[in-house]
Length: 151
Image (cartoon, rainbow, N blue to C red; front, side, top):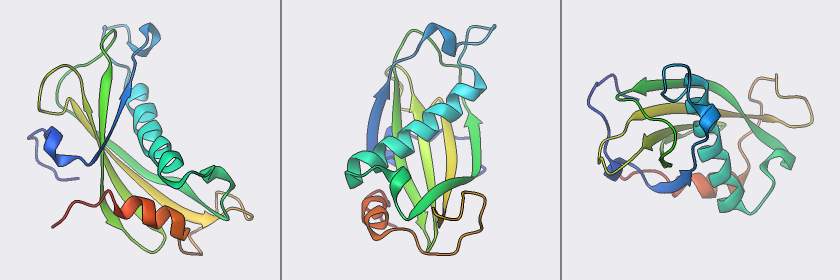
């Protein structure tokens, strides 16, 4: 994720999903609670993996655990409008994937927020607290390389 304060645009993302907002998603100030942004990032990534692989990714021999997250906020969003989530992959390593997720609400071409989400793959039989020891499953790699943006 760059340090630029210029919001990314819809053309920066490869895959899309829409989430409905709920009354409880807003905080006391009437805009989306910070924790909800991270729930949306997690949902965008894992729903894509489920659909693209056709598998329960929690049952694979190697599982992706979240090693890093971040969010840049550009403008407020919240209930009741739906949120469109754009997904792109910046890097696919041997045991890790770096995703970016743009959140859009309304007709604006600019993201209201952008998240960085890093999965690191660990041996599922040894527990999620392990360091990366094996490459990610081939089925996951095949699914995420489709999200890479050409250089």
